Image (tube, rainbow, N blue to C red; front, top):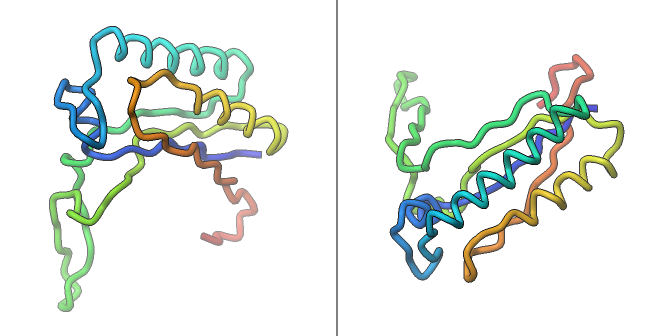
Length: 138
């Protein structure tokens, strides 16, 4: 079965990774960034070796987000993001093909152990099964 495994973050986290710490997220050192990238790279390599990795990507900062909706006249309305009330956003994801929910949960637990600077916010790793039934249910 395929699963979407998601990690969350906030604009403050991206700022902190670029050296601009805040009360929400302390500034990352170059050594801390290297440790995080090495940790994620090791997970990706292991998942590729087991054949469970379908896709995985880190996403750019929320400040580079674009929202597209329909206006009352039915025409597209484009807004740069994020909205001020947006607290957490999708920071990265994996699409995994695993034999069981237990296996993907093991992987998510490993992802949750990613090294971060002391005082960083703890985000849960979210698992969503992908509907492959072909019924088109969302």
